[in-house]
Image (cartoon, rainbow, N blue to C red; front, side):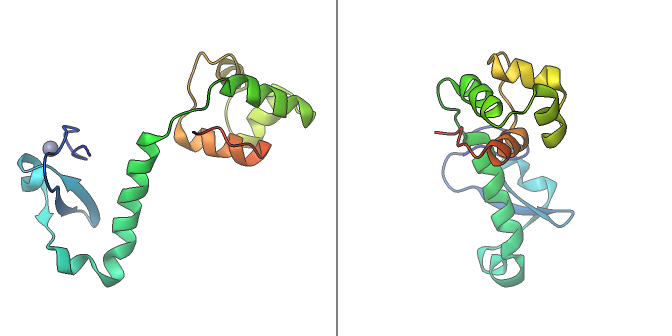
Length: 125
Ligand SMILES: [Zn+2]
């Protein structure tokens, strides 16, 4: 995994620190930016924050299926939605949706989830 502050790969065990109430897994060098949290304290109420961190990691790791643009276009047309209608539904510009369908742009994780939800398709491997 990578350090959540500097982005460098962490070798060995990452250090969990607290910065403004958020938990980050960081490398040795970045541990100085927050309060080091010891493992026992992470249990209980603080667990929620730890889960949020691992979801963030998942966001960076997703991989799109081959031909995702075509799948989106087909499903959208099947549901009789124009690019503008679907774009409005998921909160992106139709021009951006068009580029995603042409696979010129990879949707970010939030957009991807909304497209999957709206069209009831799975676009991740
Ligand atoms: Zn770092």
